[in-house]
Length: 136
Image (tube, rainbow, N blue to C red; front, side):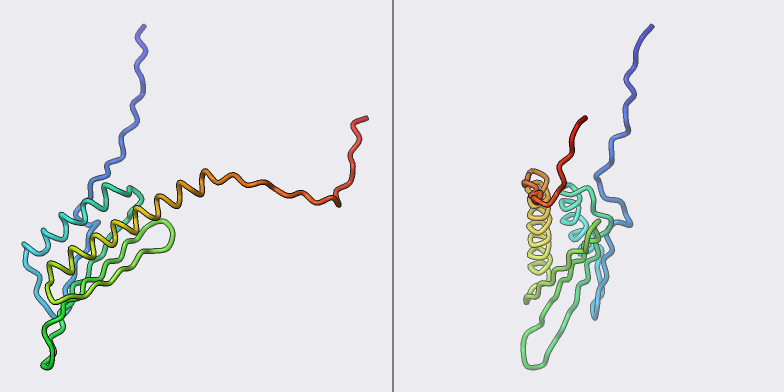
């Protein structure tokens, strides 16, 4: 008689095709740009397995008085309230890099705070107004 352990299927933490939504406002998205965003977003999925979806919006504003401005907005849909970050700069790839760094820092901070809250043991103060109970 052999005993075989039941193996639970390991949760796959890799991102799927629909987990990252990339949209462009006032600009056309190239495949290279989409691949760049997906590659950087994959790191976020490795850090946190509770992420449901990441939406990245890339915007281009061109003013006649100033230089072009690129805005990258990131929305992480997670169990609690969503995380939303917005970065603007004069270079699109720089905006994407800074956005992903900020989202990564925010996810790490969130997980660190969750660990601290789990370890926080606090005393419960019971008032003196409770009646005495006899064990007769």
